[in-house]
Amino acid sequence: MEPKRNLDTLMSRYQAGDSAAVTALVEAVGPRLHRFFMAQSASRSDADDLLQETWLRIHRVRHTYRPGEPVLPWLYAIARRVRIDQYRRASRTTARERPLEEASELSAALPRQETHADDLETLLAPLSDGQREIIRMLKVAGMSLEEVAGATSCSVGSVKQKVHRAYRKLRDTMNAMGPQKGSSRGLP
Image (cartoon, rainbow, N blue to C red):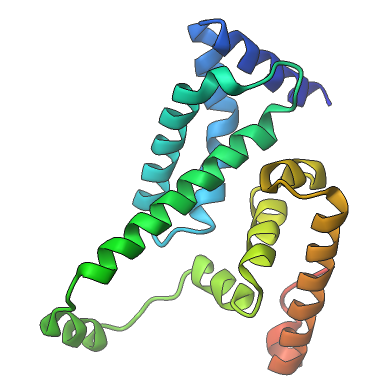
């Protein structure tokens, strides 16, 4: 519990204008937020951009943090909104763009290299958006049930229910894949 209280204290000091607290908060939480974005981004560059935008937004809305409240759910809620805003921006941009014929021919000719993020996305594909998000927060970002509940504005019971249903769907999917593919992944 002490590290979480330390983060809460750092955030309170940040609100009071303590620049050392800002640095300590970024060093303590930055890697977690970066992992949160890496689990959902196609590239490290995108995750870096999302992280930077998150810190800018945190700075702009730092006055809305209520001292004494847990800071991690507040930070992850902001990060989640940044990610949603970026997704919407990207969707609007791609809706207006016209595909280049040369680009599609070039991409078809180049072999695609799979990454761990691709494997995770393939595994999580059958899940609903809400289930994927909760699995990422719990398993990739390492958040607690209470932190996920705060970040998603759900109750802890609702988070547990979504996780249980997601695990069941993942087990069914992996069982359908066969024993050799599904046995190498460990699910609770």
